[in-house]
Length: 295
Image (tube, rainbow, N blue to C red; front, side, top):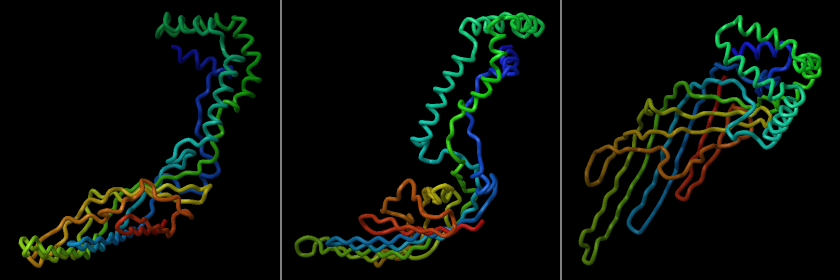
């Protein structure tokens, strides 16, 4: 029943407003929600380490592609509300408080409405009688006279959050192949007299398909800044054949990026989609990442 009263007050232009996040002209330059594109991905890891007894050389590559789906453009990106947007929200809240104080019902009238809604429940005739009686209330009559001024003040209740500049692309399906060409050499002379000496050369060479659990990445474009940011999803290890000078043929669990830490977000990179690349350096080597999108 309170909703009925709110609807009645709305016809007088006096209902409270919600904060709206509306798309604008920037959305015209973005892909429509549900549109798809294909992104090819190449990740190349080169790491090398050496101690007195051990030498490790890692060369691994992932070549894959993901079918990506566009989400509706938004005004707020991965980094959350900007300082300017927060200021706009705060200002609109202040405007809303002033609006309610100037044009809204008094606490006493609000309590009357709440009490009537509680008393009448689902009895529509009861509510109609109350609304009829309420229309004779001097405060309601004043609010009705001020409805044009109230409508004119309403635009200030909606914060200006700027253009719908951000668009998120999410993976629908990803496939790929991991290739390894690694060498692990151990040359331990042992203790005094060569006791416990140990020598082994192990190679991990071959390719394997990525796991169905690999979800590639998510992508965010920024139409205002003209940039693209990537978030790479974890790549499950694959099994690749190995050969040991001591143990013969075997298998090895291979991570595409074994040691170099990858940032949570890669970018923003200059340009919106298309062909982009970056290199991440770590203590033991580098990871090169390349993307190319086709819409």
